[in-house]
Length: 408
Length: 81
Image 1 (spheres, each protein chain N blue to C red):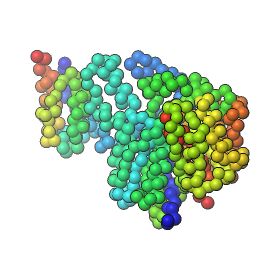
Image 2 (tube, each protein chain N blue to C red):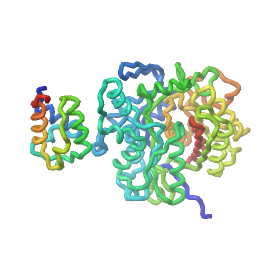
Image 3 (spheres, helix red, strand yellow):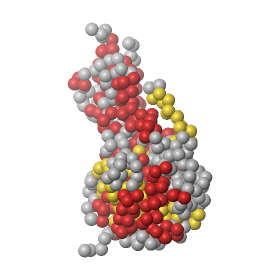
Image 4 (cartoon, each protein chain N blue to C red):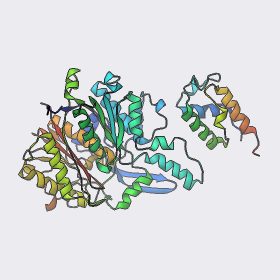
């Protein structure tokens, strides 16, 4: 078998409560500035409040100014987040209008749900206002694949384009499958990542109903953690075969070196240590990294009672003593849980941490719990690691783990 | 309901993502790149705002802005049967 093609990252973009753009997002994460704050949403007279990490709407408008959005039609916030993140990533990669977009580029966008605000507006007309009609663009604007189509249209990408959906692991699956498309030679470039816009009343109330939401803030691996906190936004990466990137002289930001996926096949909401371990092992093996190698671990770290214990057990199970020499970050404590977008955002922040040799601190931590004993970066600290292990474990037992590698 | 020419043009521009200044009376939908989805969205908003139901079959790519506005104004003046 011929040597596996290396897959490198040449562009990154993101939108979240931490800001618009990778640089401000990274600076705030590193400075320990969290985006979680008291948030209120209202629809049809129903008021919802609680902690969340919403995107600054005015900053998003400014970021989208100048993009040729008119042919795209009505845009849900879901697509607007994805478009801003993708435009940043493609500009950084220097690929705008590149001939590779003609056929040899894929667009893979992970979303846990579709355009919730658009659906909500339609239902509000039907059920609260007694109207028999909804906006004619309700379906094209809210379908799960709308962001993928919108990115392809904006950028003129004609290769394989589709959406991936696996709840909180959606964008990890999108990035991992994109990596395989490049490795296999099917495409040279992939624009991959995820988007989520779940902070509208109808979606948020559904998340609250599960009973896994904190009423204070997100405290990953802390003994007094009460659950997860929703965020919203998008993160998109330009992945490229190393040979294509080198041939055109692109700056290489890091490498997507491995991907492991597994399905618990046990429970719709409870995590499973075996499934978690399986995905981590598979990702390390795929990257050719022995489990005894200390790494920067970007934990799934949702701050729920169940996830954090199961994840700590899975990490100990696979890494063994190497876990003690590793460094664990949990950036959901800063940007909240962006569901389908969060794995890509965490991979972006993880690659930045590797490249800069600095770990952003885990926020809101108060006291340890023996079942969650991990080498957490409770303050910003320097990192010696070459590898990033980025975990995503979704509702429904769908796990995906990515391995990143620092460029020398 | 009294509907003004300017209000109809404003809805057409808003729903089609166009600068209202560019929506000249003599321009056709085709020239302005107003497609079927823009027309559907515009007619939806016209009905929402003015209570006027326009049959999309009365419009085509060669329709001008002023023909469209005339049609809406005519329907707005017609008392409901």
